[in-house]
Image (cartoon, rainbow, N blue to C red):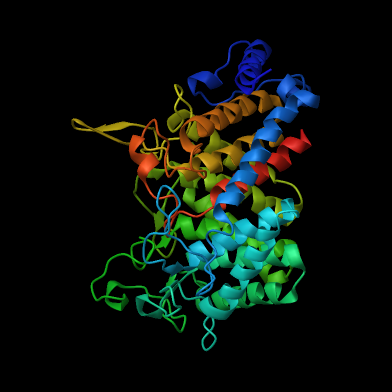
Length: 463
């Protein structure tokens, strides 16, 4: 049976099992007394019939690693190259941004752990760690620079940011888990200590996000790189906190706690989990993106991909703390996913739209406010969180699995570049010009899709 036929059969099996698939119409799953046995009765999720799906994910993972590594390794100046056109030809200034360098290192390390036979991945991970340690880390004052030029000279007035620092900590942990090199763990611990000393908000909890070279938080526009500058280097209004950095700090704290169960780290992990879950996420399952220093939220539109990603991070943090997901976190994370299936999911072609109101498309007089783009990374986050929901909620596992299958079909048809390899920056159904857009930019690395494929393979093996 071909894969198209297999997925059609899966869809039919789910229809018969639950009495009319609501997933096809984009509705959130309802409670059903089907149990794990329901999911296991679907042929694609048991025995040999599950293998074609797994084989597709594994094949795409190996293709993905092959187009990124060693191509992106900068053998002249260290770190990774970040500018490639749609045909994977180097093009651009090849700046060295902390997020990109860390996420490429993280992707290589996780890929190498999964596929030890792919020697370039292990070499790329070691190469990336050396750059994080020797060039991006400020040897005089500690902390990571956010941006260097290609030769390694700090830019942006040597400022630093919590967002990139979170990814760098996770990258160090992944390299430590891959190699056992104590230098990797020590650098992650040093970065946590630097954030604790300079960025932790002792009054309101959580972390300030934008810093001078010496670690002093930049809290007003007069203190920015340019006087009067209103936004920091990742677009957060200066003086405010954001869900993006907070969620990624939660993820890196979860990663670090897995290999270093320090008591202060645990306290910060619990604190950050509580802030994200109880202050930034609100019913029916949406998330405030910006907040005042005391965590009073600011009105903003909903970024659907960030909500999916943060749901993943809440689950991981709760599991890191307790070995299983606590009931409150499980309920909140599920509400986030179910709300995204209602307001962000495309019931016709599949895939998640990028942003809009908390209720989906909305009208402001005669204008529809809704970002229809289906950027590549929310699709990757969606793959992981849908299988996570299937794992955590047996009664509705079949419906979450149905959404996963539809999303994977969408990614294959509209996001994966079958000709040149890699994932397009957005789905071709909403962004037909994406086939000619760069394969890699300073903000487009290999980490989201690598994590989605690896996490999906791991969870499929558990079903």
